[in-house]
Each structure stands twice: as structure tokens, then as C-alpha cells.
Image 1 (cartoon, rainbow, N blue to C red):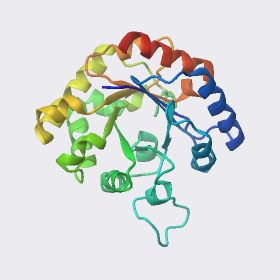
Image 2 (image 1 turned 45 degrees about the vertical axis):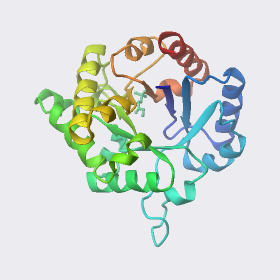
Image 3 (image 1 turned 30 degrees about the horizontal axis):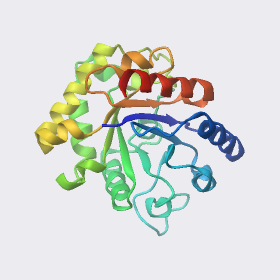
Length: 256
Ligand code: 13P
């Protein structure tokens, strides 16, 4: 399985800055079959960057998309409009769940709409600090996974990527702290166990599972060697080109 390094730029960079970053990143990276490097710029940058990008080296992800293809939905961009422009879509991110109030029904429809439009969902799941404190992590993970994938058939599971992002470890959270590799390993085991229950043994092994939450060049290696982890979803550190390239180099060294 490939190793994924995904940069989620969140609400950062103008279109011009995004384009310059991409240009420099493409220059810095050789083509590498074992690696899947993905960047997720703002929606307005996707179209110009899709014309600029060398897809042999880097893929594009959208940070969002709406599940209906067209209609009276002011301000939305549909996955059908993004079709052909991006390869991936980040769906279910905790910032969308908790800041923008996206619920499970909304998320499962987005997952289905992305797949329908040939875009691979990166379904983000993860417990909050209080859910962990109350011992609810396993239930939350299982529920978010089962619900998020409820419209995904057995034959579509090869079009899914899962990202485990404990909400309390994301750098935008005031009290953010680092997850230990053991904590990540335990939840990744839960994720694969839940996939096995829902889809069977092969699925549990073949779905890429990424980790995200304050990943940087200093700790990337420790997360990439956690059993069952196939890559990283990176916020803040992905905004620094040199650090993002370092993380990609670390990923090649420890995994490929
Ligand atoms: P940070 O790497 O800034 O903690 O963000 C993680 C994240 O939310 C990526 O989607």
C-alpha cells in the first residue's frame, strides 16, 4: 500500500500563494511510486491549481463539497463541479463537525456524493477530549466510522481513506497535546476491527488509515511506524514548505 502524506491548508494562502507553493513543491519532489502526496488548498485555488499540477507527483484534495449536484444551495460547491479537478475530498473533519455543525447524516451523504463523482473521500473521525476522558473513544470511533460509511457498498471500499484525528490533538484546539504512538496504535486497531466487522477481513487490511493531529517533522517518524498507520494528515506543519518536504522525505525513509 502507498504511504500518504496529505497537507490540509485549511483557511490559509491566497490563490497566488497556493500556486507558488505548489510550483516549489513540484520542483522539490521527484516522482515516487510508493508515495501519495496530496495538498488540500482553499476551494477557490482548486481550479487554477488543477491546471498547474503534475499529478504524477502530487494530487489535489478539496477541503469541502456539497452532496447535491446543483440547485438552490447558496454558497455551496458540489462534488460534481469538483469532479475531474480533485482526486480526494476531506470529509467529516472535526472543524466541520464542531464549528459548522455538520452531523452524521450530512457527512454520510457527502461521502456518497464524492464517490459518485469519482473523488476519494478522506473520512476524518476522532474523539473529543471529554469523550476520551469518559471512556467513550471506542464507541465514538465505531459510530463515526459506521455512520460515515453507511452509504458505501462493499465494492466501493477501495475508494475510501480513513483519517484518525483525535480532536484534542489538533493544533487549533487551545489545549492541544500530542497523542502518543501507543494511543494512536490502539485507536487504529479499533478502526480496523470495526472495518472487519462491517466489511470483512480484506477490507480491514486494505483501507488506508492516516493519522493527524499536530504532526510535524520531529514526530512524523514515530507516527508513521505505528502498526496499521499508512500515512499522515497534516495541518499547520504543511503550511511550511520545507517542513512538509522533510516529512515526505521521512515517510520515504521509514516506510517505502
Ligand atoms: P494540525 O496538524 O495543525 O494539528 O491539524 C491537523 C488537522 O486537522 C489536519 O486535517
